[in-house]
Image (cartoon, rainbow, N blue to C red; front, top):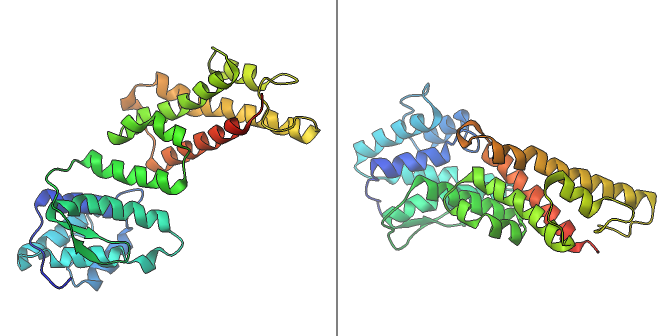
Amino acid sequence: MALKPPPLSAGQLESLCKILAETSHGLTGSEIERLLAQVRVSDTDPEMTKWKRLYNALSARQNRDRSADRVFAFIRIALDPARYVGLHSVFEDRRTAVNAVLALCGFEFRADGKFSAVGRATTLSEAEVRAHRLRASLSARGVHPDVLAACRAELVQYNVFHAVLEASKSVAEKLRFRCGLHSDGAQLVDEALGGDPPRLRINAFTTDSEKSEQRGFTNLLKGLFGVFRNPTAHVPRVAWDMRDDDALDLFSLASYCHRRIDKAAR
């Protein structure tokens, strides 16, 4: 950037550091060390938690310079598109989340690795930052629109607990709709996909291989409900823990089930 950006607020810088150094998806400790050195910022607290380590280093340099120039330099090198060849979804996840914060100071980090000025936003919450990242990941995966429609409100609030529950419930609801049934869970799956012939078949259901695939899909749906839906429906939210990458895999699995049911024949 040609111009020197003004200092970021403590809250803005903290949000950026939490995004870039997130425990499960962010930069590693060794990456933080190397990138700080490349932008000539002292690694003041290398023993601290990743995001606090990054925050302390960038905050100290920003206070000294009275400018966010080194912060922006760190973002530029950490999100250099060349570092993400073959990792497009990771790049877009981080860029989307970073831009939610940069919008507060009137900037955007573009896909070509450069900054540009944008209209300044006025509010931001951590939930919005994380929701942007999660929705970007779902979009990159091509998740079925019925899954997104079922949990849109939960994604806006970054309520992963209930988003997973709604995604699972949407599969059951589609089975009921396709077959005119009113049951639920394993009973619904057996009534819809079991039997010979089944009410709903995912293939021609003539060869042993096709019948085996039908049984496998039946078991897959039962597993979907047993592993994801039942625990979220009966375990208190505070006692239930799922990482974002596990939740994304669940959304992809629910998406696959939706597509097979869409193509199935009565």
